[in-house]
Each structure stands twice: as structure tokens, then as C-alpha cells.
Length: 99
Image (cartoon, rainbow, N blue to C red):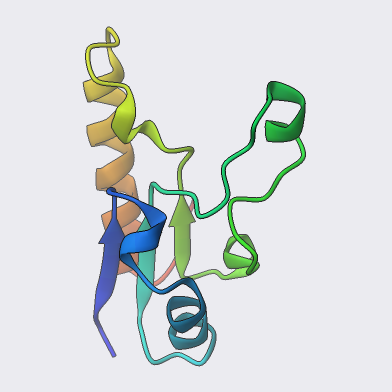
């Protein structure tokens, strides 16, 4: 498979379990995720909480970013966001690479 899923909306838009299964079993080539399924309620919790109940971060076919989509109007954020989207798509296209 050569399909890549990119989600920059909300985690709930995509079935978390189905996505992890498709990636882990190789039925989906890759994913670029700028979303969390689990949101921390404090800064302390954010430092130790994973974004999902599934270990997406352990899959070589997944590129994750810390939900930058909501940082509209932050100086320089659009440049950072576009650079990271380009890196995610490039990494997915060549089957890996730096994340």
C-alpha cells in the first residue's frame, strides 16, 4: 500500500484503534499526525502523557507533531508548520527518514 493518512483536525475524526491496526499490519503506508486523542489537563501531565492509548510513536511509518494546527497567529508558526508538513510527507514518500 502507498496510502498516507494526514490528520491535522482532531484525533476523534479517525478511529484510533483502526488506524493503529492498519499501520502496524502494513495495510496503510504511513500517517502524519498533528493531533492527540488524549489531552493533558495540566503542564505536569503534558510532560508525561502520551497522545494516544496506542504506541504510534514506536512505528517507523508515523510522524507526529505536538498539535501545532491551533497556533494560528503565532509569529513564525506558519513557516514551522509548513516545514514540518513537508518533512512528514517527504519521510512518508521515501519510507522513513528523520522525523
